[in-house]
Length: 157
Image (cartoon, rainbow, N blue to C red; front, side):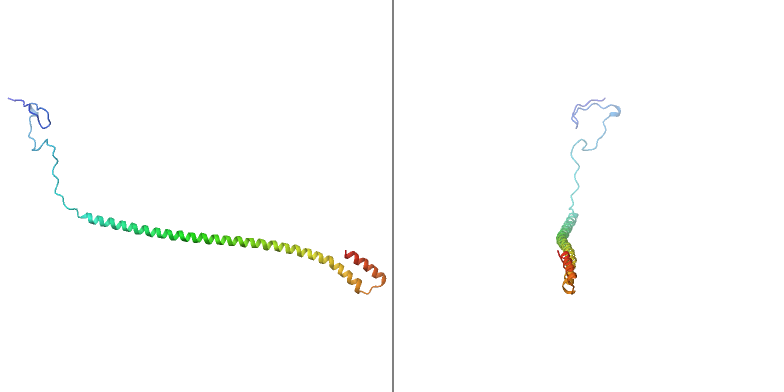
């Protein structure tokens, strides 16, 4: 005959009588306990030194690369500054030359105007000089001398 057991099981519940297909089955030893399986014995990690060496080498490489790029940047910045300074000097020189050319052009125009005025005055005076030469040196008679004097006064106003 089947009797019921009223003992508490591993789960803390009372067990019920087993009938037919639900009869108690054998369970492996340690079933229901909550202890984790034991860890395998630890072995020393030998790759950590190699990994650390690789990391140190990469850090050194990055540091050297950074130094090279900083140096190249500073050289390029210096070259840029020199070029900008030279460009400013050239622009200043061109501005000075433009000013000198403008001043020379103004001087040339004034000289041409003065030359035109002198030529005009020369044309006016040359008629007077010719009339004076005719009056003084051509040995004119009295009537011709009077006409030459009137011509002289007309041309030499």
